[in-house]
Length: 94
Length: 417
Ligand SMILES: Cc1cc2nc3c(=O)[nH]c(=O)nc-3n(C[C@H](O)[C@H](O)[C@H](O)COP(=O)(O)OP(=O)(O)OC[C@H]3O[C@@H](n4cnc5c(N)ncnc54)[C@H](O)[C@@H]3O)c2cc1C
Ligand SMILES: [Zn+2]
Image (cartoon, rainbow over all chains, first blue to last red; front, side, top):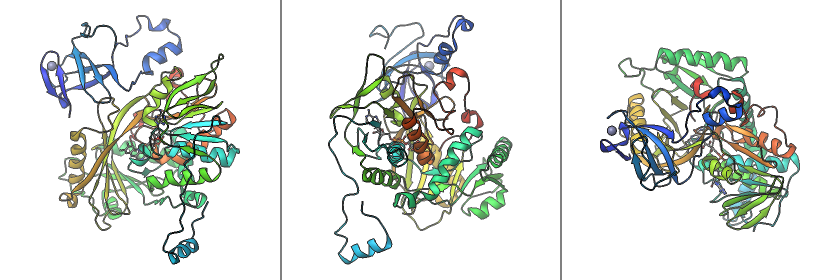
């Protein structure tokens, strides 16, 4: 079981969290303006990288808050976790 | 190819079994082929076999970054069934079951297909309704599936505890008698041996690192750890690594990769006659011919390529197994491992052409593609050879996610394996 650093509560066991999938996929401001191609891509296409992954988690059975994380999908090591709106310390997009 | 028969076994016995030869070659990659398959799992090797046998394409190669059959093919719990809800799925999976029925004879290799019956337990009123719906839908599609009461389920599989005191009591079950298991490794080995005999090169320890394309965007070959290999057609059959390989051609896929784990117990005498699945409490169990209980657990909650799952996931499954089968409470587990499964949003596979000319993909089998191995390989070979889908895989496109034409087995809750 992973130990996940919630930016508010610190290290907590994985079963307290729910996974929110890839981060930085903004909901289009005007969905009706999108082509089917773009809407399908927004809904379903994912990077699914082997390596660094920017993703969302929710401390569902703790403080209840969403946060962002950068995790290595080979080692499952958490590089950083950040509050919504904050940039990871390494800066930029992961 | 040395054919296997009772007579050849007897002859070899006389000479102390010293006359058996290697079952396939280990060739150096050639500079160019008519087609390449990336991934020497059951689906990839099967695709090569059907390309050679049914479409006369023999100047082809299967490339794998590891050893053949070392991916999910060699890691799965081998449940075979075709009782899926939707017409498209029933056609695809039942096509596979029909091929399984004759596969050992076709390949002259014993894949140990054992239609011992797959029993899916219902624990809630919702389960009962969903299974009844599946049974009716299956029968309309000519797929066998029948309803058993709890007592009938126990008669079919005596180890099941059906007492009302259970947290999730068994209130009935759906039984597909034509379902069962097969020997996972033998499927890879049987296809490899038969494909090799027709001239297919199987190249192990050869990871694909790039996909080459010409000015018009069409595939021209691949870069590998063993050099450049040219080919006008490339089929990606890389299971959990599909997103990684497709990214080499600049394509994003509707896929996420998760660890899925399984475990086996110490071997015991035959005690368990069929396959039992419980979606609600997430446990799958059968007994191998070696005597081990083969138990499948769930996926981890997060995407990963770590190839091992969380211990809490397998303990959850073992708790369910102990509750349903109290006689197994003192069994010891011998081994546990993980595989990386590629999951689509609707839990149905993608067997299709792509937007890149010459690039084909067979993926998204997630937690349940072993059962489909021969059927998937058969229709994918057709798709690659003719550059158009077979009737059976025509609905399983990538574009279904653009067009909203999902084949939503996820929502139909047949789930997994
Ligand atoms: C624990 C577990 C239990 C399961 N239980 C069941 C079950 O009971 N019933 C069922 O129907 N299904 C089950 N499945 C799913 C099933 O195993 C898979 O859907 C199926 O085996 C996939 O076969 P494949 O040939 O597509 O993939 P694989 O056998 O995984 O083959 C893919 C190959 O691609 C190779 N590869 C990847 N990247 C590259 C690259 N860059 N270059 C070259 N080669 C590459 C890999 O090395 C691998 O050998 C289970 C899976 C797991 C992990
Ligand atoms: Zn918290």
